Each structure stands twice: as structure tokens, then as C-alpha cells.
Length: 132
Image 1: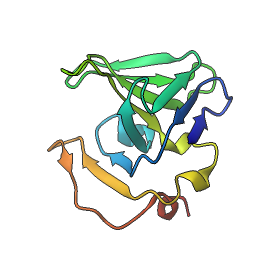
Image 2: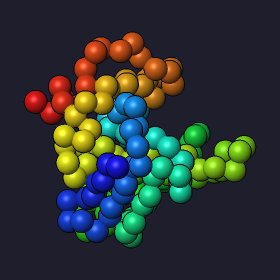
Image 3: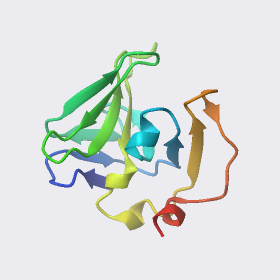
Image 4: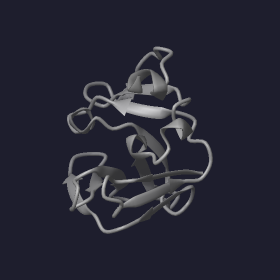
């Protein structure tokens, strides 16, 4: 289980299991936040606790970025709409992992959220490479 929290500890998340990779997106929001995402579905492998403030991105796909109103760390994003299967997509910010070693091995998946909305070619780097 990977656990994470904002700087002050008010907002916490857990990710049960191995997320497989960490996604670095270059969209207009993610590149400003400098986040690394691990995805799943609300109430499944990801659990969230703590009060947040939300910045809602209204264009498609429509997501809310949740951050601690005390220290300002972006903890997670949450889809605004349910998927056809009734589940809600959610992603936690792996940069907030309580134990950096728990995510250091994860390969970085680069995603072009700015122009093509597609995966970019892998560069062979993992989280530890960008934290070194």
C-alpha cells in the first residue's frame, strides 16, 4: 500500500497495490502543478480523506483538482462524471507519497494532454531519476 499526504497532513490518500507507472502530463494544468499521477477508480484501490478545496476544469474530460486549503498541495483529481460502467476515475499525486522509496521504481509514462491527448514515447526514466 502506498500512502501520501499534503505537507500539513490534512489531506491523505492511499493506493492499494502497485499503480504500474507514474504519469507526467503536459497539459496546461499538470505542467504547472508539476504532479505525477497514479490512476484508478474512486472507492476501489484509491481512498481519500480530509477536506479539500477544488479547482474545476470545465472542458472535457471535466475533472476537479483537489488541494489542501491549508498548505496548498494538490492531492488528487477526480472525474466530474461517472463512466458508462458507473465508476468515477480518480488519480492521486505520487509526489506526495509519504515514503519516496515506495514510488521510486515506477516508470514514468509521458502523456500529451496539451495537443494530441495520447501517450508519448517512453524515455526509460523512473520516478527516482527525476528526484535525483
